Length: 68
Image 1 (cartoon, rainbow, N blue to C red):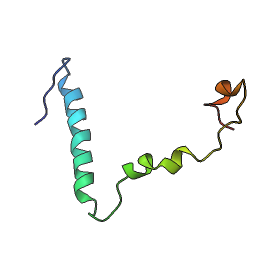
Image 2 (image 1 turned 90 degrees about the horizontal axis):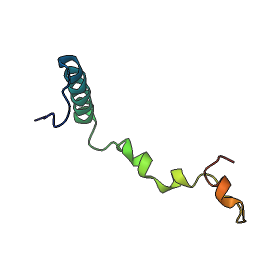
Image 3 (image 1 turned 135 degrees about the vertical axis):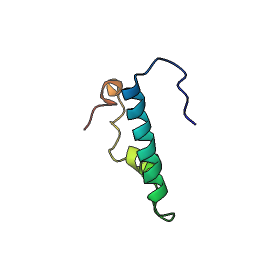
């Protein structure tokens, strides 16, 4: 059951949201049980540590989030 708890969506907006939810449910239902989930890649710690961290120093904080 889906319930709108905030706002007042138009019938078109509600239909679009339900279509997305139904499409996602159908995709999950059609996925083989032994196949890895797509979210597993996002939870992989190796994805975060692909690049080396900047060398320690007084200006390291400014380079922390910029690509190498």
